[in-house]
Amino acid sequence: MIQDGELTRLVEELAAERGFFIVDIQNKNGKIKVIIDDQAGIKLEKCIGVNKALRSHFGERVDDYDLEVTSPGLTEPFKVLQQYQKNVGQKVQVLRKDGSTVSGTLLDVTPEQITVEEKKRIKTEKKKKQTIREEYVIAMEDVQHTKLLISF
View (tube, one colour):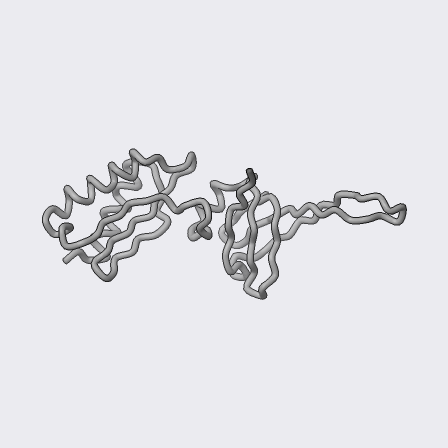
């Protein structure tokens, strides 16, 4: 049996050695899922290397598990501060705990809050449209989730 503490310690050591950060580690119902990322975007080779290192360390014990090492995926909500930091300057959608949403450019991130700039087109008195910019400073405790907005 693979204990959560041993798994977490090993993945943390690998993260320190190989320059990635941990998004999530799940160990339940015979499945181990390790989600990793880095500032430049995680490469498949790095996921494969981490998978091999885990298999090497745990040996036959891992044979009882479905082991998956993966990236967080573009459509998944951010789970850790490093994901916010990595995406400064990118378009995001923030769902607040009160149900309201803010979509715009992620300008700044601290452990306590994020700043998002939203652009809106409004009609002026002369029936012309004008773009206005609003900055929202949102406390992390008020964020339900944040997702990267993908445009094609």
